[in-house]
Image (cartoon, rainbow, N blue to C red):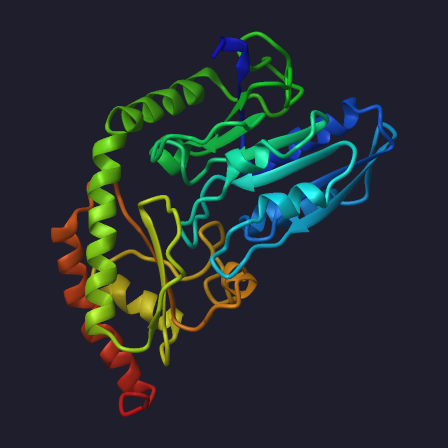
Amino acid sequence: MQAQDVYFWAGDAAGAITRAVAQRARRSSARHLTACVCEIETAPLLAAMEALDASVLQGTTVHTTLARVDAAGSLDPGEVAASLSGEATVVVEVGNGDLGNLQPVAALAGLLGEDQLLIADARFSLGRIVQPTGWDLLVGEAHYFGGPPGISVVVSRSEPDPLGLGRGSGRSAGQDGSPPVWLAAGLALALEEHQQSLTQTLTRNQKALARLRQRVAAEIPDVWFPPRVEELGHIAAMSFLYVSAAELVDQLSERGWALASGSACTTDQRRPLHVLSAIGALTQGNLRVSLAPWTDAEIIDEFVEVLVPTIIGLRAQAGADAL
């Protein structure tokens, strides 16, 4: 990878991805460009892509479509490729931050045409797993792997200057979207640290998640887990019947455990999670567990010892303990 293939963006990954889609439309000679995004992408990116829909950029109209997923949250590469014709840009997460599943990025890449660009959203996977192959642009956001907030990275294999910020080191001073050097350095150092311990961290987290699922399934009735597919290794979702997700998160927080219920990229914890709605899953009592690199089975056991009585208590308050 050459230095000119790495670009930095002063903002979140959703902004960088949308900018890359718009830049490609501006360079296009076609009158219409399809931008296809997975329906379980993060809420901010879906909103940004919706705002881009029907935009006219230097004579090219951008039309945004959604790629549907199955009950496991997985795209069908053949179905996505068949839905496209002519120039198109496809945006797909490497791994979903709410379900923890991986998407078939490499398989999809092999089915796209030469005039169809694949953007891999690696926010939840960069520094956690070995990245898939075949993408044209890969986008990560620093704070997801312990770096400073307010900066994202774009790695390009095919697009020159995908963000329109100028060539060279990946930034042009004074242009909108260009981060200061110290932010870029902080991102690089954080990613390097994660990459050095990637294998050990992944193994530790996978064992911890297996322990979590095993104990929760054995000790808490009426719980739903997403179908098991190839996964990131540090994110798990589960939904508990007869439980308020907001109350569950609040009570766990009072007991020293910071978890979430809503989307991984929004502060609105009371709106039904669009990812679960998309796969037709139970949206009630949703809990998203995201493991730190050092989380092991011992920490999981400590957490379950708090989770079980919390669920029992909330069901009793709701009058559902006898159901």
